[in-house]
Amino acid sequence: MFESVLERCTLTASKTALIIVDMQKDFIHSNGKLYVLGSEKIIAPLRALLNRCREKGLTIVFTQDWHPEDAVEFRIWPKHCIAETQGAEIIDELKPNPGEFIVKKETYDAFFNTNLESILNRAGVENVIVTGVVANICVLHTAGSAALRGFKVVLPVDCIAALNDFDLKLTIRQVSFLYKGVITSSELISFNSSKPPS
Image (tube, rainbow, N blue to C red; front, side):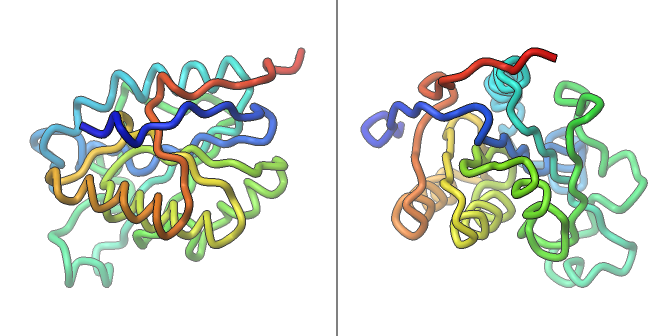
């Protein structure tokens, strides 16, 4: 669908983070509170990308939508991802490993009132690969916020999901045009250094 805009991308592993946005049961499971239809399709390519990033020693960050019962966001959306509930859990296929970062957030933007920027700066990150759901909501807001903080944004289209095709295309357009992000696929991303010896 997007082959004409996809770019091959080579990144320095030690300066790159993989951000996995909101791959939680309430969004990904068909019985979830805010199920994103078809989001299961991104699990396999995202898991493969995650494994490659782990092998190369990238900084890995998972975000979690994490709301109190009376969240302001519930004036907009049905209740979802309430703190400490099963629906707020990251799906089993993408469970974080020890030492990987989990950023809990209450808004669309994973940088807002969180320690995400501090995590990235301490790790010397310059590039962020932004993946997950929902493309035109939390993925887009997080990607935009990253770009406005000076990070190079890479968006693999096979690792993001939206509520419909229009929203997916909108996300790609906005990341490319507004934030000068690299539009690619997981298979077109390569890394130019290996994981340092432990």
